[in-house]
Image 1 (cartoon, helix red, strand yellow):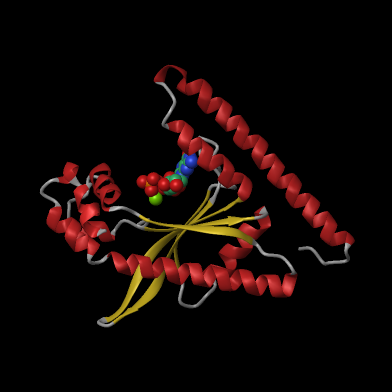
Image 2: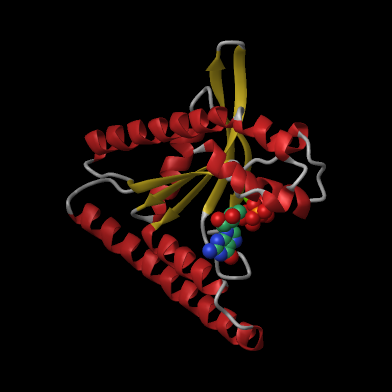
Length: 221
Ligand code: GTP
Ligand code: MG
C-alpha cells in the first residue's frame, strides 16, 4: 500500500525522504480523524435520544495524499520540510453532511464546546458564500492525540454543510474540471444561480421542519 503511494510521487523526485517521513507520521492524522468522527457520532446519537432527530445525515473523511501535500507546499511557496507540512491545517479532513441549516450550527457548537477540542479558525461560507456560490461552515479544530511519547495536538478541517449544499459542491467540483476556457464565465454564472436556488430550498425546508415541530407543540428556538 505504502509502496504504491510512493510510486505516484514522481513529480516530486528528490522528495522521497520527506514523503517517507510524512508517511511514518500519517497515522497521527488518521487518529485525529477517528477522534473527531467518534465525537460527532456520539453527539448525533445523543441528540436523537433527546430531540428525536438526527442532525447528521452522514460523515465523510479524507486524508490528504502526499502528492496533494507536496502540491500545496509548492502553491504556498513553502519549503519541502516536515515543519512546513505541519503548518498545513487540512491534512485531516472531516465533512459533516447535515439535514437542515440549523443542524450545522448545533453540531458546530456542540463539537467546539468540548473541553479537549480547540477551535483555531472558523470560516462561515453560509453567511458569506464564496464568489462561486459555495456554501459550508469550515472549522479548523485541534484534537489531542495520545501517543507513547506524549500528547500531540493535531489539526483537523471540519466542513459542515447541508445535503443540498453538498449536492451543489460535489457537482460543481466535478464540472469545474470539464469547463473549456471560452465559456467559463457563463457556466460560473449558471452554477452561481443554482447555488442561490439551492440555498432558497434549504431555507424553505428548514421553515417547513420548524412549522411542523411548532404545530406538534415543541418549543422551537
Ligand atoms: P485550499 O488551499 O483549497 O485549502 O484553500 P483555503 O485554505 O483558502 O481553503 P478554502 O476555505 O477556500 O477551501 C477549502 C476547501 O473548501 C476546498 O478544498 C474545497 O473542499 C472546499 N471549497 C472551497 N471553495 C469551493 C468551491 O468554490 N467549490 C467547491 N466545490 N468546493 C469548494
Ligand atoms: Mg484549506
